[in-house]
Amino acid sequence: MRLGDRALGALTLLGAVALFLASRQFSPLPGQKYGAETLPLAISGLTAIVGIWLILQGLATERGAPLADVVEWAREPAAWGRIAATIGLIAAYILMSDWMGFTLASLVLVFALMLLTGTKPLPALVVSVAAVLVVQFAFGKLLMVPLPRGEILSLPW
Image 1 (cartoon, rainbow, N blue to C red):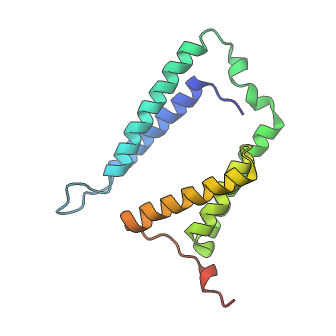
Image 2 (cartoon, rainbow, N blue to C red):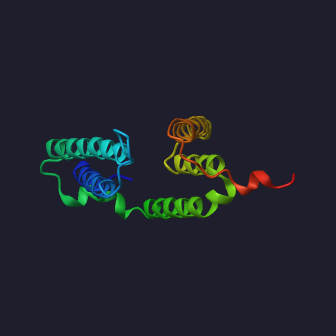
Image 3 (cartoon, rainbow, N blue to C red):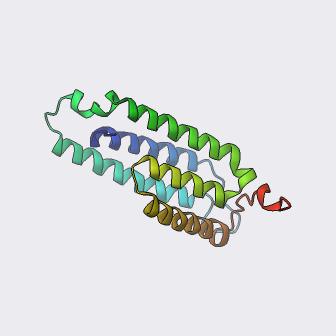
């Protein structure tokens, strides 16, 4: 699937603006220098920089390219199947994460998404395990955000 740098940059920039506006709604924590909005604001700033960079790169490299070349990926039926599979996987994650728990549900999601993008199974598994463990450590231990443990762990085996 190929999306032009300008279009991808515009979507990234739009996401950064949405994240910025949403994070401004978070209330500050009493007695703390940093509130709940700190991390989302930092991420939105970095995302905006990436979006602007993609737009500028797209303008430099795609100058004069016809629009049909930029959206060529949309003609492939397999691309639409991958989009549908991605949406289905995310919906399944939302529905199953309380039952499966964050670790198992995230591992399945990341692994499946990497396979969808054409990554070979062994590297996909290694990266998936590493990514899930890092995210679980960052949110569960450092930020002390409770992640779903999962009902599956409490089943009598």
